Amino acid sequence: MYCPYCEQGKIVKAIVKSSGELIFICEECDTVWASHEKISSHTGLFFSLYADVHNLEPLWSELEVLQ
Ligand SMILES: [Zn+2]
Image 1 (spheres, rainbow, N blue to C red):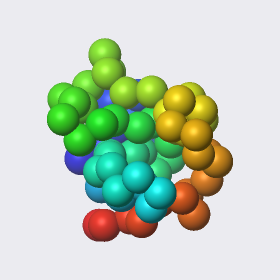
Image 2: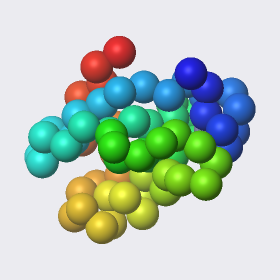
Image 3: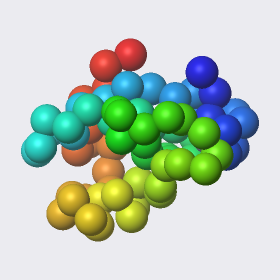
């Protein structure tokens, strides 16, 4: 599935290493969706914002990509 924001990036499933939370993230623009959220252009937030809220560095190394 492709990202509804940038329409170029593939959305991948990932686990936040520090919290174990399952998220979806766009490989291109780094938009994050929580696993319970419906992926659309009305949901999701930037990885930097998500990281800020969850006390992480906004780095892909904080994530374990599952697919
Ligand atoms: Zn995107």
